[in-house]
Image 1: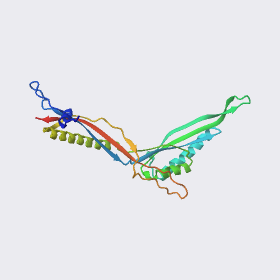
Image 2 (image 1 turned 180 degrees about the horizontal axis):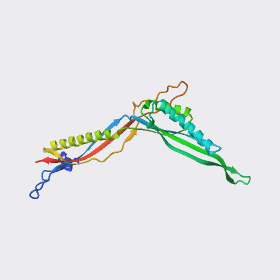
Image 3 (image 1 turned 135 degrees about the vertical axis):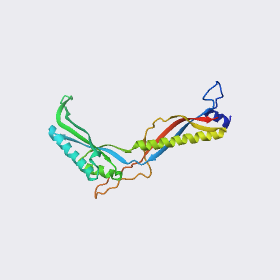
Image 4 (image 1 turned 60 degrees about the vertical axis):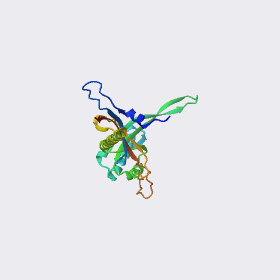
Length: 240
């Protein structure tokens, strides 16, 4: 069964006749949902690089982890990362036990020194050098890379631009519906814009990290893009 264009328009067009004297809604309304999205290249990468060490004493374990962490920080600074984009995320120190098997087949735990860790978060604006940073951090003594993420330093501006585009899409939809119904579109009566989350996905043009070391390969990393979307629910008046 076919549905006529007029029936479809009836879903979004509410043409209210005068029910009571002074009824402000008798001109009718058009309700639409405008949508927009944009893909933006991230302007920084964040990576957590750390080291786990073991020593016979608490001081030995912690000193080894601290030495490697200093190497990670020095490497980041050599690549031009400012102090404000380098931060320690965690420092841990704890005793370590190991299981000893007894002649009767049972096990018991025995003290086996201390384990320490130190993790540093680096935010890098020069993303093509991210792979180089990770490779050189390993050479400086790190043995953990716990995650890489990409972001925007001013996501609010991007979100605001997308919301404006979504509102323009809402008005364009309303204008098309009003024209199809043979009525004139009036001003917006209500606007609701729920926030939408950002998602990162790979892009074919994402830059690959390049290595400048002579005998060490940089870690390949794709930056991808940040997808920002917005929806605007808008209700417009119909001019009498």
